[in-house]
Image 1 (tube, rainbow, N blue to C red):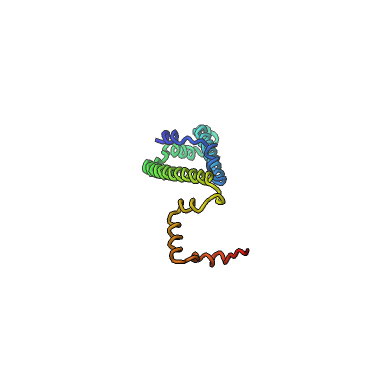
Image 2 (tube, rainbow, N blue to C red):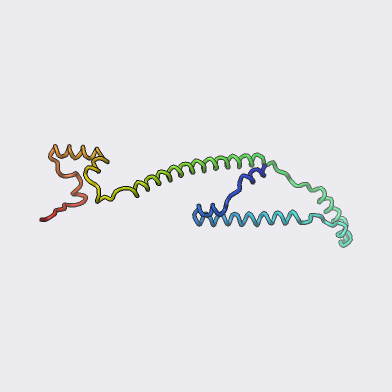
Length: 173
């Protein structure tokens, strides 16, 4: 059951490092280092011999009953086994939710990146402000043209809030 998950979890670590923040890369590298150490420890422990030479202890020790009791206890020992299938299912369910959330986020980010690229292209190809005409502004914002016409018909020549915000600008001749 775990083997397919390991096959599916192949990660290009160098590419991942370029996409993450430095502190996240450090945390991931620490996790990888710890995983490597634990894997090595498990491999070393599996290679160690687990046999005990009880005959040697029978010869060396005077109290043979202790050695016999220890040998009986050792042979009777059965390691406890745990059914982890429920925990594994829960972890796989969380993993699927996390992958789905990551894919959803990636789609949103890709859409936003595309929008930003279009916006950047528009900014780069736009004419400078000093080359714009009143007609260009009226064409871009037709509601502004209507507002100015309405204010001119009323005889309202001051824009509300302008002088409070920018002050009275007088050009002398």
